[in-house]
Length: 67
Image (tube, rainbow, N blue to C red; front, side, top):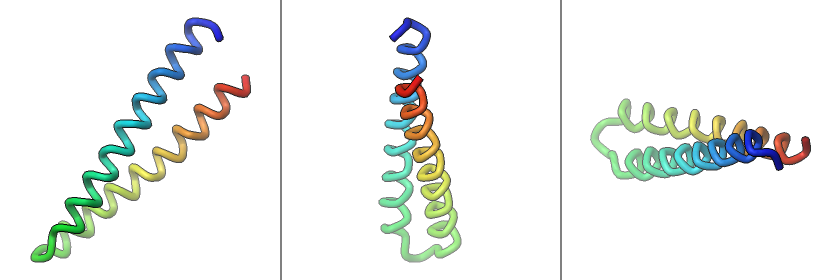
């Protein structure tokens, strides 16, 4: 694997970890909110966005490895 490809893979892996951590944080926080359904819903939507980006990052990593 050339140096640029390796650096890109490292960036994508790190970003994947960040997105997964944010998703967990949003879901745990939303689960603990009982008095503000609007905030709970927004946090769940944030987590859903993180899940979509996580899937995209996984696909990018797979494509990078197949090149």
